[in-house]
Length: 144
Image (tube, rainbow, N blue to C red; front, top):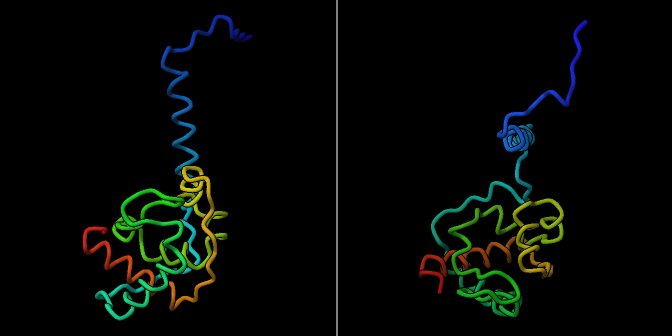
């Protein structure tokens, strides 16, 4: 008969470190979790200056009370957001911030950092696209 005693079993000193790492790796590799977006496959072509001008007006009236271009305010700085995030991400956040905070891990992390959810301004997709074009224009000008 084979007998096994946990008292006699000495674990390698690295076992306590390696096992949790393997567990995290296993969990991360399971499934192909796709990042959640409200809108998908936004086609971005050349910058549209006319839309950017409309977007600037919308941004100043609906967004500037919480967002600055170069510095943290109530929300994160947005001057270079279109260089860091995809069009799908930015447009989804503008159109439905509530759905994004519930379903998107990046937005959940930003909420934890800024501790203020983004207010839904109820912009149409066309208005959101204009704001996106304005943010692209700002980013193309160095984020200022």
